[in-house]
Amino acid sequence: MGASFEEKSVWIQLVSLVLGLGAYFAVAGRMMAAGVTALPAYTVLFLVSVALMVAVLVAGHVAAAIASKPEGRDERDRLIGWRAESNSSWLLAVGVFAAITGMLFSLSTVWIAHMLLVSLFASEMLGYVLRLLYYRRGMGGA
Amino acid sequence: MAVPKVVIENQIRVLRLAEGDMTQQELADQIGVSRQTVNAIEGGKYSPSLEAAFQIARVFGKPVEEVFRWVEKR
Image (cartoon, rainbow over all chains, first blue to last red; front, side):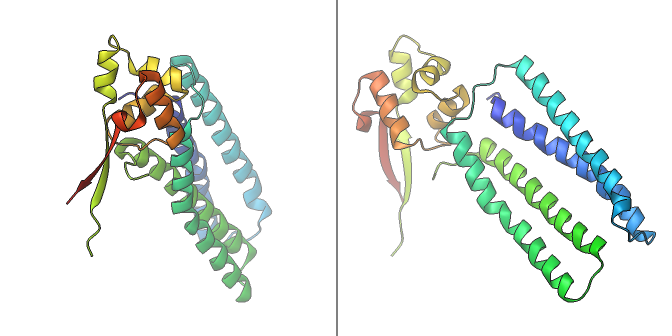
């Protein structure tokens, strides 16, 4: 079964996230290991990674739309989106609680910011992977 | 007490073929979903909403229980 435009869109979002934030964490991880603790030092890097993500998203969606006409989201796409979000948002909540705990122990702002970013990244990535699984394996009991 | 596994089976493929080889895309266009969703419903990978089930039955001019069947498997 060929993938629908919505499924292709999920693949594009996953690739964009992995490339954009993956590149950010690869560089930011080295900076943190080297002892860079000033948050502004990470800002430019973050903006570049966001620009990279947007570029991949736009190019990917344009290519997918040229390859096949977008049909728009239907009830299955919406249900898959809701279910994936409901099964992945706990990761973001874990990150938020970890960040709050870090604040209580006066952890550096850089670590708290990255704790939140990592949990957002992990939660989004799990959400996309779950969507792709639901598209491929189905949701017979839905 | 063991709860029996419930499967919703359907006759969509048979009905499509009976309607002069109606394609999945043609059915999808009539009920407002993607062809992939029709494919998933037909293959038992997705249970449609009540509204979509009634729309499918309406396309074939059949009552919904002739298109979809509730089957308990033990």
